[in-house]
Image (cartoon, rainbow, N blue to C red):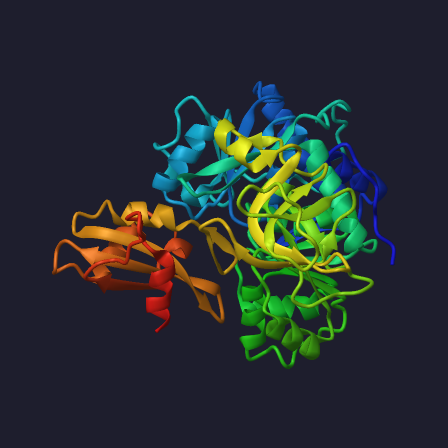
Length: 506
């Protein structure tokens, strides 16, 4: 057990230290692209210099709309190295989904995959510097002999804003969580205390790099231990199994859906998992049966953790060394307090074993939501982040997630807010009422079911799916659309979703 517990002023400083200590070690591999740490940091420095030369720096925001690639990794660090705030957005989003978020972020520059130009060009703000990256555009990868550039030692400053990470909003539009450089860098060290890494780990990154989980448990984790990050552009179970064996992967950051997908593949039983030392699971609840099957088949332990965008993101983990409790999300990371409070007022601290709302405080917590003072005041109270999740803590300090207070559905690791889908459904003239709920699913955790009352009796589920497909990215599409004569209501006239779930389950 080693672990790199060094606390850097920012993750940019962390990458710079890796480049100076191990300039010739392979840092990134993605398909044919391969970079040493020296070349990696040189590319980051070059992008930072370009942005600063364009007048973009402290106080500015830069949006990235990029899929998994070496360029996306460089962009993540490069924007922060310029002193600007990174705003990563999902490249699968439609313009209808991107436009309000971009407007809220008010960026000075947008870096996007050139393959998205047909959707984006002409729809982005004219005053914003827009750069297409990748095939058909330009690359952020520089020649490996490019020397390490000396960045301004005062940039970025620990207290300045590092990331503006958008997370779903129960009112429809996503909320942007502001995280400082100090918060992000601190969370890397906090996570390292429970999931320590060894020098030179081979880290496999499958989940999307616009998401906090992949960035925290892949991009930053690899740089912190001077390891090699193997980036998978798009999940394919057969290719991933081949990578695990062929590249001698030691650390796998996964989700329940990924683990199930790998175990279902025909090559799983014949794959050599000998080098795989630890697997982390996040972004959705991991059924104990899946954990047991994985560990029995691979001999590799799964450490499940818990966090959220607003929490930097990691709050707890089952330790890599020491007692792991399947079914729990482990203990709080250092310098972090987690309490269970009553879910009405949120003021009474409940004893161990009792169920209530989870609240947390620590140096990794967000500073607030951008442009959302009301929501910030609701989430951050007296120094505590109220997570909106329901859980309990046992006598040993291990946290179990029981439910969500927020009306959110997690499907295949993606957070989906039914209100957004309901709003899109209601833009169809043939609908009278619509409600979207999550129902349990063995593979995806939950799937979405749309419950609809038709205005037009000729309206079909195919017509509605076409309507949704033009306006929402695929993971937000309901798996099923059911038609009702009327939707059940509460005594105050609201749609009774609990009753709907019972009706669907019958």
